[in-house]
Image 1: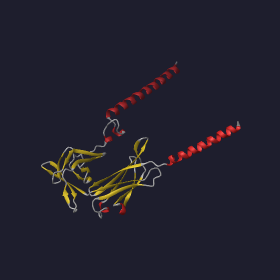
Image 2: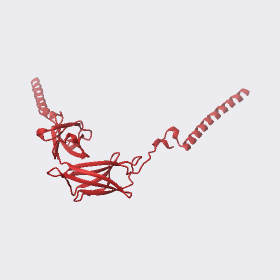
Image 3: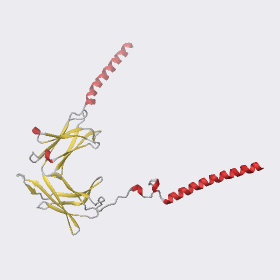
Image 4: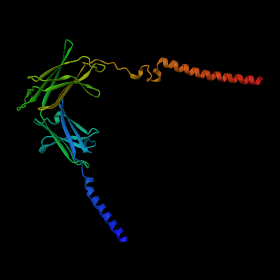
Length: 290
């Protein structure tokens, strides 16, 4: 009997050890990291945006706290531009000034690399960007506001040539994003397109608004954006929210009717209490006389 128990214990211990050896590589196995990489030209600078995600329970999820490095140039002569860490949306970005890549020839090569992470595999993405040109002129004539755009691309000789059929979109910068202004329009054979700007868009107290012209995911020049500040909006006088006599205002700005009602109730309550004490005192005096 004791011999059988010993045999069973030895067998269970060996099975558990073998099972632990089979699972340990899986526990230490890194997850496969996936990244997307986009480059946006904003005025004369470039914005590099990398997004990281992994597949968990058959669903891709954006992940935070992943360190990434941004580079420019070909693989044999890369220049380190800077570092970034993904946020809760899985996004890491870097603004690159034009003088950091001025020595290169077009197209520009950008890349992002995530490596030496204890949880995820190494991952690298590269993007080639042709230098494009997006110019915006703001004109006003007879109370008609006009936005004129020119789109150009570099040819083999490095000269800027007009780009036809480039889809352009106007926006106005808002607090939480960009507000589209009208529909997208395409450039003509001279690389130009004209928008009529509306005059009923709210601005700040001086009427200033930020007008943005954008080209997204173009096959030749990629993503380009330019912006200007212009006093083409409707001036808005900001009123302090709590300065009005409303229920949510401070005590000094309470509604007059509320002040009257509250004070009338307080006077009534204290008046009843005072009357009760008078009656009690009168009853006490009558009792003494009796």
